[in-house]
Amino acid sequence: MNLDFSQIVPYIPFILEGIGATLKFVSISIVMGFVLGTLLALCKITKLPFLKGFAVFYTSMFRGTPLILQLMIIYFAVPQLTGYDITAFLSAVLAFGLNSAAYISEIIRGGIQAVDRGQTEAAEALGVPYKPMMLNIILPQAFKNILPAMMNEFITLTKESALVSTIGYLDLMRRAQVVGSDIYRSFEPLIFVALIYWVMVYLLTVAGSLVERRLRQSD
Amino acid sequence: MIKADKITKVFGKNTVLEEISTTVHQGEVVTVIGPSGSGKSTFLRCLNLLEVPTSGEIFMNNNEITSSKVNKLEIRKNIGMVFQHFHLFPHMTVLENVIYAPQKVKGLDKSTAVESAKKLLAKVGLTDKEDSYPNHLSGGQKQRVAIARALAMEPEIMLFDEPTSALDPEMVKEVLDVIKDLAKTGITMVIVTHEMNFAKEVADRVLFLDQGKLVEEGKPTDFFQNPQSSRAKDFLDKVL
Ligand SMILES: Nc1ncnc2c1ncn2[C@@H]1O[C@H](COP(=O)(O)OP(=O)(O)OP(=O)(O)O)[C@@H](O)[C@H]1O
Ligand SMILES: [Mg+2]
Image (cartoon, rainbow over all chains, first blue to last red; front, top):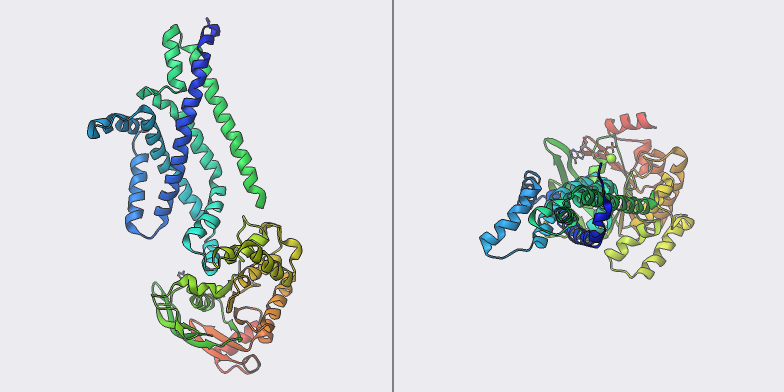
């Protein structure tokens, strides 16, 4: 065995900047996935056939093809078709945001449908309109039930984010590769970023259980 | 005043209500009894349009509410409903449950809503529970909160669907007492119940449903002592 971590020391600031680069697009993707996913879930439970059909089609398309392919299509096809020179960052946000919206919409749909039908009826009987009923009564209960599944999705997203290294976005993963080829050693930088991913996911898990505990207050 | 004119409700091939006509006058307390599956809940749910009758009309103060032009939410503001299984909002405290609709639906400001909610909670004997969550309450307490929540909208009419059927026996009385008190205030009420003594005591009029038909109606003393139809006789023989 011939491990030498001292060689990566000069590169540590460069690698650590990757945390910011990764977190930046992951967090925007998560917010985008969450908002779009909620809207898609609402489309799926409406009686309007067009909205429902669209949401179902959307989900099946994004779940039925590889994420890396979606990323490539956005990154390479958009400039070819529209002449707009899309950045790696924007491609990453779009691919991950649109993709996780599909998964999140399924989670949220399940969560909404698991809320007792009586809750809707109680709200309707009080004359509460659809929007406040969803926002104040149904969704808070749905989110509470699906929090574990949601945390899972965020964790998956954080890990899968390494795929953006394939389009040259300088995230953690890509930086490990850059350093590796600079010092002709791959193992040390890879181990180093593995540790960083692991800590990020761990913190996400902890944050998840804190939120969960807070939501369990009413039990 | 609420008037049902020949309302019929069909689910698939199943005719659950058949041409039911009756008028509940201002301040009247009507109890609805009948065997399981006779359509009592469906009838009650038609009155606040949780179910839309397949045919027939419902009038509230002489305005037809079954017309498709009518905004159901507007109608329901004036009709409170209490469910067998309470359906309190579990993520809100007792006080939040009671002030939610007055704030959101009627646009009351928070302090006004809180003030009247506190009065209502005092009325149903739950002043000390206003900051509790529903899951920490007994069934009887939950149902009293649900009554306060419905009353907070100051409805003209209150509908109760078997308000004590999901309760342990020792809690039935506390809920029935609240409803009896309410009956004395002159609010119009329609109550589906399996509690025959209560139905007799509280009602101005009793409706007896069987297989989706309004088989018999009358003053409680007449109905319970001297039912006219054989179906009502059979039913009373079984439950009394
Ligand atoms: N949404 C629905 N879809 C299909 N059938 C229904 C629906 N709601 C009620 N029914 C049927 O209508 C009939 C009457 O039901 P309803 O709940 O009104 O009876 P009920 O008199 O309230 O009975 P219980 O005393 O058991 O509460 C039943 O046969 C029931 O299965
Ligand atoms: Mg019923």
